[in-house]
Each structure stands twice: as C-alpha cells, then as structure tokens.
Amino acid sequence: MSVAWLKVSTILCFFCTAEMKKEVFRESGQSVKIQCRIHTDQDFFILKLGLNEETDIAVIDKASRKTTFLQEMTGRIQTNGEFPSVDIVIKWLNLNDSGPYWCMYSKIDDSYKQLFTEGNGSIILVVSGSGLDTTTEAPKCDKPNLNVAVVYVHIAALALLGPMLGFIAMIMYKGWDSSSGSTPRQTENRL
Ligand SMILES: *[C@@H]1O[C@H](CO)[C@@H](O)[C@H](O)[C@H]1NC(C)=O
Ligand SMILES: *[C@@H]1O[C@H](CO)[C@@H](O)[C@H](O)[C@H]1NC(C)=O
Image (tube, rainbow, N blue to C red; front, top):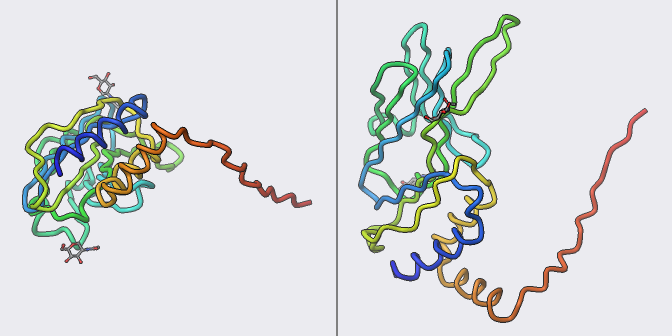
C-alpha cells in the first residue's frame, strides 16, 4: 500500500514539481506543528485551511493578544511563540484534517483596508488512516507556490489510489487524448 502511494506521489511530483508547498504526512492520532513566520510588521495572524482558504483555524490579534480558534478544533490546537512568529500544534489528527494550511497575516493600512500577506511555513497536510504505512519518506517537492489543482489531485489520490494508478497508467501507456473541449466562457455584458 505504501509503495503504491509512494509511486503515485512520485509521479504527481514529477508532473507538477513547479508549484508545490511542503507536504507533511501524518497518521491519524498523531500531531503536527506548523511554524509560521513573516519578516514584515503585521496586525493579525490567521491560520487558514482549504483550497480556497475558506476556514479560519486560528486567529491572533497582535494588539489584544487574543487568540481565537475554530470551535471544532478547540481542545486539540494550541499556539506558541512571539508574534508574528507563531507555532501551531494540532493534536489527535484525523483523516479530514488533511488539506492545505496557509500562514496568513494581515495589516490594516491607513485607509482601514485589510491587506493580506502569506508568510512562510504553509504546508499541505496529508493524514492517513492507521492502516497505511507512511514511515517511508514520501518524495518532497518543496516549492513556494501552491497549485490548487495539485492539492486537489493529492487529496483525491489518497482516497482513490487504485483508480489513480489506472489513470496514470493510461496516460503513460496509451497516451492521453488531450482534446479537452474548451469550456464555453460566458461573459456578461451590461449597459
Ligand atoms: C520567507 O523566507 C525567506 C527566506 O528566509 C525570506 O526571504 C522571505 O522574505 C520570507 N517571506 C516572508 C513573507 O516573510
Ligand atoms: C472528521 O472525522 C471525525 C472522525 O473521523 C468525525 O467525527 C467528524 O465528524 C469529521 N468531521 C467532518 C467535518 O467531516
């Protein structure tokens, strides 16, 4: 099983090396530490989860030192460090904690606009069931930018190991007919 997984990640890494974040592999029940850093002055720290950064996991307000956690995660998440350096530890991971975690910071400018900046330390977390042997180091593609499609493929690969292997085999041996019909794009013209 782990060998198959290794192969899938190797192939995917090969396809998409250009745009990858650090991947971190954990088994369910284990914990993960995310170390967010930034070199510029900031007002807020926000750890976001999701392909579209849709969930705020932890928010720290520099001025009040107040830390707010996502309700479902309280009790198994904690933060340490001196703002804006923030270490986040999430314990008792389960499968659905998998996904991209973004180290985001924001600053309120003179016109009260909130400007977001991504710091260093964002990761893609892959939590596997206890049946999966992940002691073998999977190939790492440490590149600063995150390609949303790649994350999707990675998460899908975890759930669909078999079909993925078949799909990749098809690409490699039969040649993939890339006649992907262009999606008609609808532009709305008012006035
Ligand atoms: C991330 O780290 C690099 C190297 O240490 C540094 O040059 C860069 O400014 C950092 N990025 C941010 C957003 O602070
Ligand atoms: C995540 O997984 C846990 C246990 O595996 C389950 O209890 C929980 O409902 C799941 N949460 C979501 C949002 O799917």
